[in-house]
Length: 206
Picture (cartoon, rainbow, N blue to C red):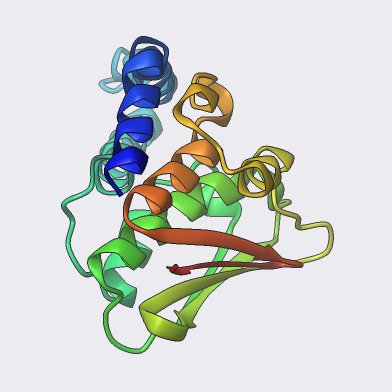
């Protein structure tokens, strides 16, 4: 175990600068993108009521995005029930075009399962077409299962590659695809693993 811990620590130290840069770049990109709309519309708010409404909506989207990233990547949100996960999922890019089904989540997901579920949602979004969706359900041993819904929905190549190759910290250096290696790394760090089986992604203890 000590040898394994040392190897993980070595990987972290070796790629920490690139990893930190990737996380910062991704968060700044998301925040800047959402801020650009209210910055322009606020100037028109006194003259155009619709501009004020748009500014309010985009401000709410910004708050939702930050809350999601904090819970998923920062951790510490604790066990979450279906309502809490659905609320945090509103921060997903393109959430308004996504069908999120949490009806099968009876009771809470444990802290690790809930965090990995949020991370998998972030990783899955690029592979879900407009009108598609994601269903969440409990998996054996306290795990969680996410199922892609809709024609053409598929797990992004970046996630499939990281799951198959057991991603290391040096893989988490591209801001655009950061969610894929990060969910695998967080799972490994918690002693869990991610499995992809067709439309299903299952996160469960090893």
